[in-house]
Length: 247
Image (cartoon, rainbow, N blue to C red; front, top):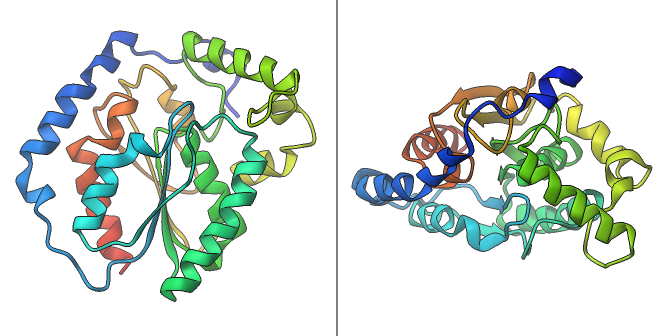
């Protein structure tokens, strides 16, 4: 875990840096060599998992790109990633097993932010069904190393969950028994057969980049906004490498 001083100081980048998303998307759209990739008949299946408060639609560009490369792509079925982490990962375990069985091949799991934490736990629990893991701006070492504005939203959602509103995480997800196994697996070593990649940005204004440096994964640094990691050309070039190595 990060120490208390590190968490309270995070993140270090100014919030206005998150306005870069549009420019990052434009640069990706201008990278015709990336978007015009030829389909591969042996491209492995992929599962995409969105970040906190986001749904599958937030990864539409990445889904489009992966399908052009020939990858069978499955969405998580998440409309807004605010449910109990244990409930979410338990549901996705069954989906992951079905996808791996359907294609007779292990799956590449890609998650952004909170989705990367869910993806990591899937890889720890289901190593036979996962060939590679990619985490984009995921605060593995301290899930609450986030900007103050995000932390206020987290507390608001948790209060609603404590009141019993369905489909929301609660305070016990962070401190209690319901997600104890999830928290343990989030910090556990990644199985040897799973290639793992953790992408971070020092200019991430949402998550402290230091919390994203997973000691059990290959780390890659990009100069990206937090939300823009799903459309950043440098991320896609890194994904090309890990996807091609996973065939």
